[in-house]
Amino acid sequence: MSEDYLILHIDKKSRKRGTGIVDQVMEEIRRSIRDEPPTHYTLEIPSFSLLSKSLMERYDSGDFEAGGKLGLYPNGDKARNGQDHISLYLVLSETNSLPPSFEVTALFRFFVFHQIHGNYLTLEDANGKGRCFLSVTREWGFAQLIDLQTFKDPSNGYLVNDTCCFGVEVFICKERNIRKGERLSLISPSDFPNCTWKIENFSKLEEEFYHSDEFCAADRKC
Image (cartoon, one colour):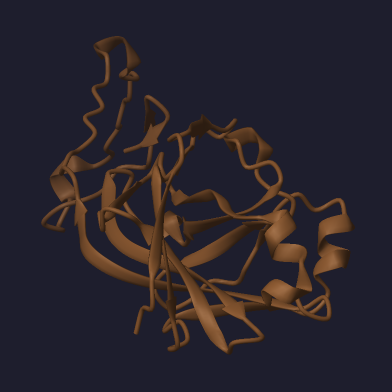
């Protein structure tokens, strides 16, 4: 059960990456405490200092059953105003099998394990809104999940003996294909080849039908 909660207001940021994918940062964070562990996935890091000092700006976890993965910035996502913070995102994975017009709406919450109290700091959208994942918006999350000074102080319980643990719960509200469509390709008359089929001994043909040899029209076999 939650003991208390705090709502933080953060400016909403979006970033368009070189791939054309737009990533979103949620505006308000509701923080609460609960005893139950996250249902869907946990990410334990036994050597956080090695990760934060490495050249790896971001670590992506393995995929979990709900169809996503975690994207963690141990030193903050500076491109989205996350400097001096832990930044954490839910990333929609396995999108290659989905149509270009797919839409997935999901509710989710993140967790940070408090190793002294044995409970979890829980972070979620303050308004309880489901977030819409599209082909161009494949991740949502918090650029300022928790400030690094608080996180790295062992007395606060989040990073103890260089070990920490994050988690996530994901609830799919709806999944649909936004639209149906087709692709129509027309061949210009100028693209049609001149094909001549010479048939020998036509009067002696006995089969019901015959196939000519293959030929190409507009780079397609006919």
